[in-house]
Length: 126
Image 1: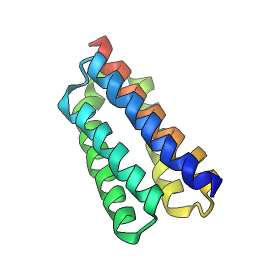
Image 2: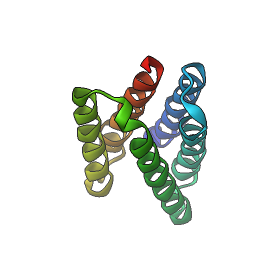
Image 3: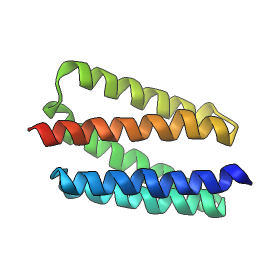
């Protein structure tokens, strides 16, 4: 029960902070809106734990994430691009293999937030 609440708060504060950062650093509507939508669907998914919300969250995160990576990756230098791909691979692999909420928080949420932060940081430099 503790991790249910923690995962909801992680979505709220993690994607919420990334939404604000993308606004401040001209991340564009795709990045800012994508973070906001991921925040909402993640909170629904973890709060109510209904199969429809899991599916919705998974589709939203994958589609928005892929669109942002395609659009923004060319603005990143090679090292940051490789790091982004590693974070995405860890997050996707973990999303489908991890069974506990504690591991989900560490191996799915954290790499996702770091990857998005890399995109925002690359966007703010250009």
